[in-house]
Length: 323
Image 1 (cartoon, helix red, strand yellow):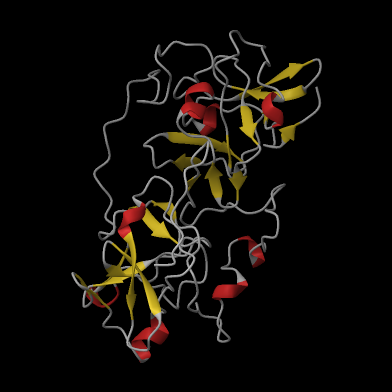
Image 2 (cartoon, one colour; image 1 turned 90 degrees about the vertical axis):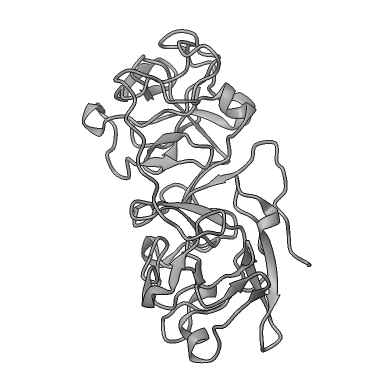
């Protein structure tokens, strides 16, 4: 179909844009990427002359964590993707034309890639009445909403009782019932390597704090005093973890911690990343943070500089590259 399929990388990308979060560029700027005006607006390729959202390719799809709806499918700019109840999926057919298509721009099929953790086979295309090819997910034609101007906007949800945000599987997004909270002190389910007490796995609920190392200076440690790290390929805008599978087994994610229990950590954008693998990961200034299984006791910094990509974290969330 001329459509890019998601490729398997050494560490599968996990892209999540938190709906209505304040995450924006800090010390991150992707090569060649345009920074959204004001920190959260949709990039220029999606802005029409009247300021509304325009049609355009979806690029690398992502899964956004919405407090209102749970996981929601977005385009590469973090804009919510919608489906229309009056369309059909079997066979795929769009019934949104004319003025409807001005309010609900069709998402072009070319250059679309499946979100990390989703099935690439769900992506397809349908030929519209004007001859253009529109992206489909699970057979349903995909649209943006003209009144969504920023990443995380959900202004189209429920419009007319027929427009709904996409869930990652192509169904209508709907938040599932929350699971019962884990007992105090328990590690995140599935988040630690075999042997939950293994050094380097952060304890759920334990606060982050600041320790001092002769070479690194002030750096963040978890509730057990284990050094906290960042991975250079990750990004804060959008919040993206590039560490999955075997990578996470070696570099366990720091589970969510009580903000009130943090000591000396910058509170700006101290958010939780909902990962498609089911884990929840603490971020500092929107940057995902990890521990290292190679650190066996508090004060160890064996992960510093590993592969030229792993570094300890300063209290404001920045990389510490000196050693």
